[in-house]
Length: 72
Image (cartoon, rainbow, N blue to C red; front, side, top):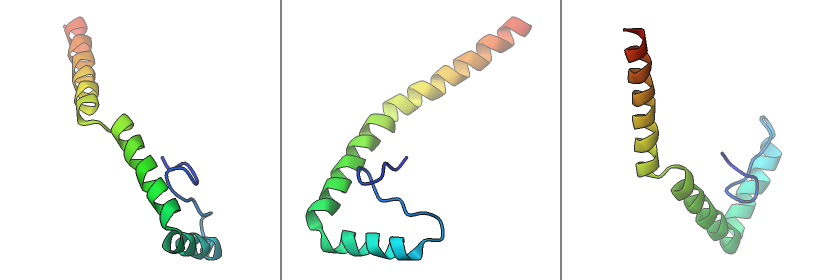
């Protein structure tokens, strides 16, 4: 999920003028670009950590197997 001006920039669909202005901003503002990079890296660490993903998948499988055990 992109949070505008925190983890990225979001232009309305079909709005090439706004998209171009965002690209110009990214190309011209090193500090802003670095800040977005740091923010999105932190977001990814918090939300897409491999251990968390594995835990979620294991929980899904446990739920499925528990449900099937109830049926049998």
